[in-house]
Image 1: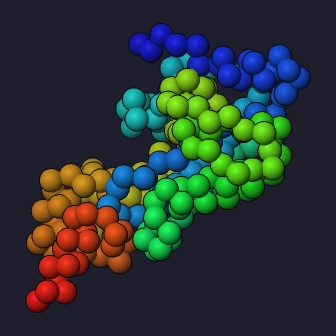
Image 2: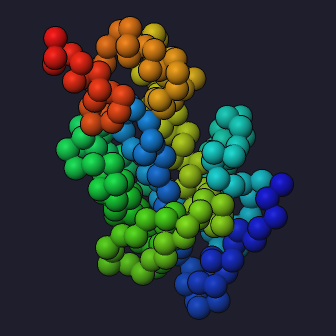
Length: 208
């Protein structure tokens, strides 16, 4: 059990009269395949959801459970992504910032303040960058769950197309089975060509 007040940042803003607070988080900076996915979520003031925390610390069943509740209860949710092509073109850091900006701009309800996990963005809305924000802010935790479930579902669909890579289990991360599959079957269009060991495999192919 994580002993932390995960509504402290929100409460400080509420005390200042700010009521529309968006939490923003990304999933998928590290995988070798597929997009980076970002969610922006605005929750009702004083919202509580027992057990909600960083999506990486939740079971698949818990994430799916919280996903449905957040989608039902949130004032607004926006999901955005940048593809593997964009990631290869502008790098994962810039692609993540781009997706975050898209997600915030995609909200139908404009937030008065944005809480962002780790990243700093150039926005026309006041924002706070919080290190480990997905643990420290309930609103960012909610965004983390939405982004994680969304991306994982995309990987499950990709697994149906390329079952030999076992994406439904590794979610595109560079696990041993994924790397072995790259060595045996090669790369697919959805692989990030600038990420090792994908780039090493490309180099090897080009040397033949």
